[in-house]
Amino acid sequence: MINNGLPVRTYIGLGSNLDQPVQQVMNALEKLAKLPMTRLLAQSSMYRNPPMGPVPQPDFVNAIAALETCLSPNDLLAELQHIEYSQGRVRHERWGPRTIDLDLLLYAECIVDEPHLRIPHPAMHERSFVLYPLAEIAADLVIPGKGPLARYLAECSSNNLVKLHSG
Image (tube, rainbow, N blue to C red; front, side, top):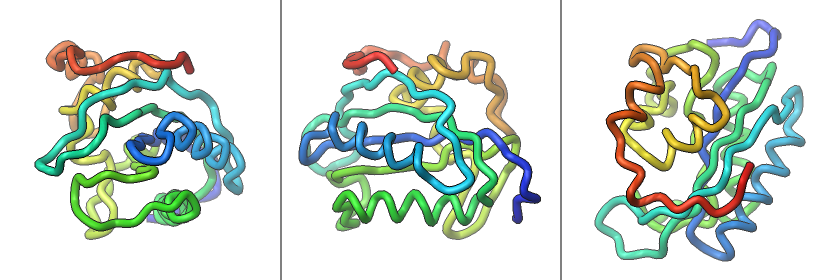
């Protein structure tokens, strides 16, 4: 898929549980705001939540950023991975601890299913640490191929989330 040069709205999930997670998320937000042909439109509050998966590790700090970009999905993904690398991200194990994790959740109304990129992010509609901060900045959002964000939010408990900082 190639972007035709027109700006589109995208949503990025940010998460960290190593090396001062709040600062890691703040640093990543600053870098997102400086991406080429991209503008940071909004950011959610930060939330603390327990980690997913079988690996014992510290709690995560998560947030969502809304961007407007002229980058293609693949170019945006490459930029996100560059930010992760610049902040010390090392991919040891699935669902393991990390300095920063940047997930391309949505890219306009596009549905992408490639080996290295799936949009919408496959499990975003099941994760409270995505849904609650996303609802702060895009309450009326419709997840392509899934339906209204509000429907998934109503079905998802927030018991494990603790709001830390306003966006």
